[in-house]
Length: 430
Image (cartoon, rainbow, N blue to C red; front, side):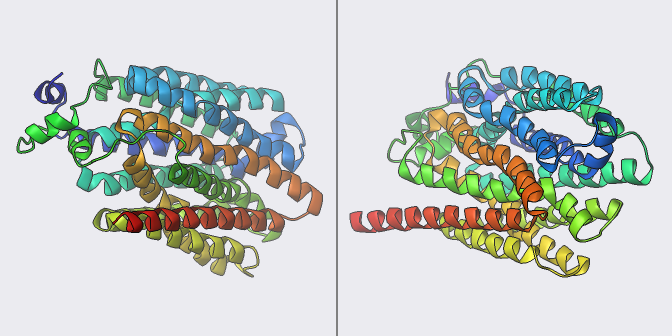
């Protein structure tokens, strides 16, 4: 397919539609992800008393299904296209969520959570490979930040919505689950109508075609990006990519530990009650949007300094997570969480994703993103259940937070060493 033919199947400014679609998609996904942890107590009113480890396993089951699909779904997206993978996946996602609403015991919730995770597992590679394909290279960082900001919005809606509806208005906990299922079904319809399904997702303009038509405004953004690359990029497990995968594992471990267990920590160890739990936790998401937009814009302007931006943000997160454990009152804790939101996982995500897509081979972007997210989300399977076990064993969540900070520090050190080694090799070649 020629460059012009490839372009003709897409409407004008299609990349903006793509960015809006996946921003909204992350919002709806995160409504589901964050809505259950504030209402664990109410859920136990239906299924009976459970240990903290057993309740934490609800999130781990979802992330197990989600993680298991990362690499297969990335491969399927590269082969069949985003639309053909997303729509069936989100139908399964909706069925999983609906089954949780009707669950009468913990086992049924576990099964529904795994099913929801499997369906949602089709999202990541599709979302970010589509943005990498259509967003102009000079806007890649900021576009990724806008897409990711949907997760911040969803976290706010999920946390505060379930806290308000269930704890304040005393509605059944299933109310929020049905709302989430309805939003997912809406998203399936949106994908069907708004995403243009190319017949061959790998048939993008070649580097030579991009060079030949460089003055033509109809050149695909991905082709322009390919034309700038002088050497082929092959392999999903090059050293610089592996270091990034390990860093994302540690970043996600700390983040999902906070998302899953901070509400419980606030209630049992800080004495905070009702909707204030969701409000304080959502401080992370409130600050994340400007943080993500700022650092993504900075990375677009300072393309060769992306590793330095990533390292600085991760070190800040280590400090803030460690400090959050012994902050004496709710006001100071809210301040620490605001800073973590601005400098933490949601802020570093767009820079990391932009860095990964820069390093990935153009023919396997979705597969590379799938492996990247597989490593990150593997930690989300471990963190909720392990932290629940730590709380059961020690009677406090403090050591869970400390372990999260230590793991994040280790990941940052590995990435830093890899980055310095890569820089030294480049300097030696020059």
